[in-house]
Structure formats: structure tokens, C-alpha cells
Image (tube, rainbow, N blue to C red; front, side, top):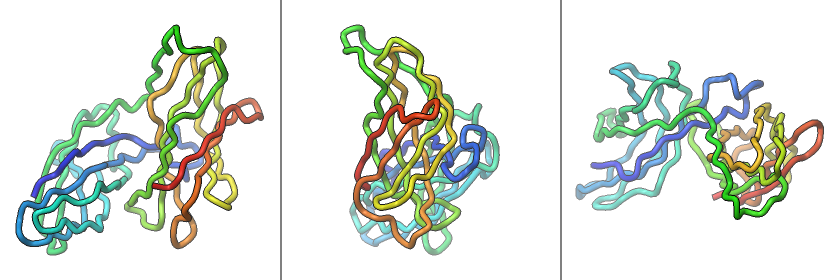
Length: 226
């Protein structure tokens, strides 16, 4: 067994009253490569830092014989602060309770980066770019989805964001208190927010994300559930 393309990133907890101050989810993306002649069922991934378990998430993955699984997305809430951590060790457990593969994954910086726009980029307003909406498995159970996007301030003045709203198809907006100050002529790195869903299954269709500032909508965009 092997792990293909493992990566990690931080995501805000959209269900927390103050996601910016709350412990962030660690989201793992990976595929499992099975080089044996027997299918393997994976049921859990455990993250370890300096021999201490910092979190785990359930899996429902079958890696077929001599095949590579689809890419899976899982998220867990760390049991300790990972702000200074650079790397996590991952252990994958099968349906017999046996650890069948281990690997390591680098952790990104926890702060949101800002990248200056090129001088040739046209001036304009604030936009929400590259919206991706994915199903994600969370240890707390129940349907969850993750919304990932970037923000661009193409104007010459600072833009203050005092919150976002996420809306599922035919649903009502869920407000998320995340405060950001966008410097002039910059774009952010990708921002991820994990959202819970109260229904039995996530609806298909377009999911909308909007940014608010000073009581008005600053930007809005949408993306289909992958």
C-alpha cells in the first residue's frame, strides 16, 4: 500500500461563532495506491506530531486490487495547537484495525497570505475567485462540505471584510464571522471554510459565497458541488 499526492491545508470552522479565533480544521487530501491482489478497506486516518496523536478522521475508502482510489478529503480538529508545526505523520488503518500504510505531509502557514497584483492587471472592484465546493468527511459526523476560494482587491483602497455568508442550493444563508482587511491591489491565497449541513445528504447544484463589509455586499460568487 502507498499514499499518492497527500497534501494538507487549514480550514475555518464555519459552525463556530468566531472561526478566526477557534481551532481550525486540518484538511487532508490523498489517494491510496494498492499494489496487492486483494482489495483493502480503509476506515481511519490518524495524524501524529512528535509521537502524540493530534487528531483522527473516519474513512470509507476501498482501494481496489492493483488500483489507486479516488482522491479523498477528510478533516479533523487538532487536539493541540499546530501553529508551530511543520509536518504531520499519517497512519491509515484498515477494517481489521491494522495500520497498513504510513506517510508524512507538510503543513502550510496558518496565516492568510497576500500577493501583490501585477501592474498590468486592470484596476477594478473586489471579487471572489476560483470557488470550489467539495464533500468532506469530518470526525464529528454528519454531512459536511468545504468551500475554497480566493479574494482579489483590484482597487487602490483597502477593503474591509467583516463576514461571509454560505448558501446551499435552495437554502438560506449561513453567516460566518471571519474578518479580513484586503490591502490595495492584492489577492489572497486560497481560503477554506468547512460547513456542516443539517439534512441527510448534500444537495447538488450551485453553492454561493458572499463577502460583506460595512453592512453591504462586497463580492459574490458560486460553484457547483464536486
